[in-house]
Length: 454
Image (tube, rainbow, N blue to C red):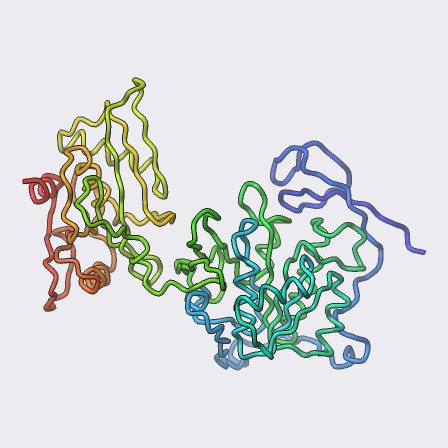
């Protein structure tokens, strides 16, 4: 009988230690080492003994000898997910989807598995088949391609995979799986790493894509070892507030596409609805002209968005002025306020300034600077900015208005949504074209103030 061996894993970074110590020598975190039991038995392959005979031995090839056949991506029939992934699911890839509890991770993947035209195996370790059936009836009652399996042992899952031969596999969630070759409890670092390694080996050898759901910690990072994010091909984050109906899907890592794309969903009673035109939900439908609001033309990946900036400037009641932002960088707000005071002569040092980006999203595009300036000045002077004006420019420390990238896409989007004027930098290189929208070019903050408020 093999001797049982114990080792210590850091719950933060996954580093293995031979003995317990107060501080992890790798990530320098305190009190994160936990003892786990390892079985001294070589892990077996995911395949059955009969299929092991077909195993090929990998041989090194010259780069010129490798066939450059283009992989055809699998269409998920979900435009928002396709956009974030870079055009669809790559065969043999491993995708990890993380998000807060109750945000809609399971609903999103169940909805995708019900609409796929491929044979899909949905493995759940958290819900029974009856519970998943109740949710599936709400989303799409009839689906002949989706199979539901409630199992947590990887060896049993692979047996069912060999019998069913699915074209795509969804695991909900990776923290509930456990392998017989590791004696620690499910959700531990060694179990997560071993189960993920088995799924990666299966995906790469069979070209069947696997999508994992991952829990997150209270700090917002995916639970388990940090090496988990390095092992998978794509890391997606499902964000949003459970008190609001809108959800945002971002890619934090993508080996097969861009990480700048954004997917927006609306949570409804029958599942998640794709939001094709996000500008509609990010701009308030106010009939009256209100001071302190301005519209900015921004970009998320290749998608142009029109975002409403709200600002409130009031006298500081408690002596020390407050600076508060929601969805915007607070340090950049402080810089813009200093530029306004130094270069434009506005005395805002003794006033509270609150800034909010509507829709519950966070944006770090420098093109928001001009709209932030306009909203702050509008609230300070209590003069409303016209609804049909939008902004797309960066502000420099000298008070100059600087150009931004891909300004033509921003102009086309503003024209499409019915804006009559867009304010950009005078240095912007705009190709000659017959735009129906008026392009107002400015070079300094003083020009912006004169144009908006006379």
